[in-house]
Image 1 (spheres, rainbow over the protein chains, first blue to last red):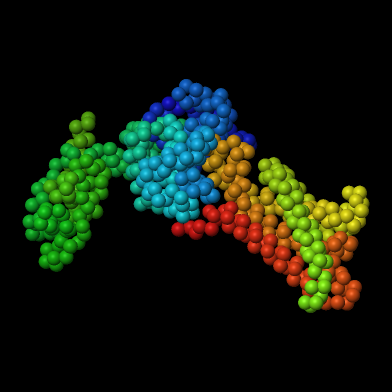
Image 2 (cartoon, chains in turn red, cyan):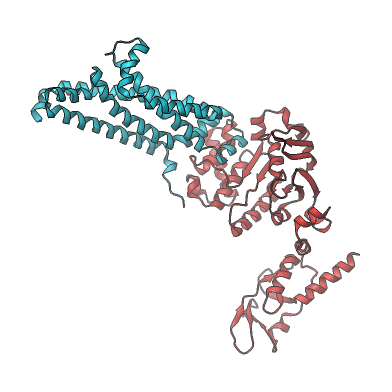
Length: 348
Length: 214
């Protein structure tokens, strides 16, 4: 557990970046610091490994005050990932990953073996081991950055906007793999981002900071969306927070119409299946042209996805499939709306 | 021409040997002095401008003037080759302090921040991260300093220190073209060989700077 106790950071000249911050980051969970620029989120993160020293207050990890520890040794026990990875251009990938073990005096052979294993762990091919960072794509470099942070198996990781410099598609896959990895390793992670969507997706807890370094709200993503503490938080999480909150509800209890009803439709857009029952697309009567591949969902997907699919589909409906991809139900957007209304009523 | 070379082989070779050590020893001395001063200029930003100005000032002193005044300052005889070594070391130092400082400045940023945050201590970070990354820029400066020294040594022939430049003075005095040609050719060849050697060293030392971005 990382504990902030009345931590303040004032820079020379009087600019207060963090103002009396007190909070806890639970062990084994991802706590996301999010807020507009100038809210002190990166400063807060950097005070944990003492790359910035607080003006007052204490930060402790598992009860031990970080200011009492040797700064360099402390940092080696805390993984660190930054935007653009910050890899050493003059070292090969495997040596980049082995950085902290080598600093700790592990012999070169052993450090490299461990590094090569980590390479596959973060989803990279071992053939990249002897390349230099400039030979890798941005997304690959970022994976190496994560591997480097994990090399000494630190209990705590700090991640400063690690996925913001890559394109949206790569970012999404990095986020998903990061969550998969975290489910295996269960590190205590402090994560900084300015992107509320990323915070909601990755955070077990979200700390929303406002300019001047005040903690506006600390809670689970659902808390923050459902019960914003004040106007600033409500505004920051966005006007569409109701829609975002659908991320937390699955489609399990959603009632669907039989697939046949949509396949046999005469009057409007019809669903086309292949021989094995997998959806092929929507077609207008008469033309016979496939209009679009229907995007599909399974009962484990979120209501956010289902809603999005239903309102963007040419038929105004989303297709549910089994794990094998066979269509087993269709839900129209009106039905999704009715489902949500019913849920709201049952909550009261 | 051939006759001149065969007749004066030992004189030419001795001049060449003199030229080599008179120009290259100062490169080594100047570089060794420039490294810590360049580092300090980066470590203490207030020193950067004075150090750069001092370097510029030293470099602006005419070489002949320096060859003639240094003996008085150092208490050496005018003909002592150590005067030349001292003068050229000073020029190399002047040229390379700025190069070292700028090379180290050029690698500050995300990478050094990451090194710091991963738990490097200052000396190890300098040796293991900053210097290797600064090497391409520093070696580029070293090439300029080396070639410039090889060319400057000739001037010291005017104050009587023997080297390839002595072939020019002899040729001028005797109104005789051959030694001048031999002096120029050897001087240029020496500069070219040293330059190629440094490029080859850079090739070996910084394989990472050659690999292209994807």
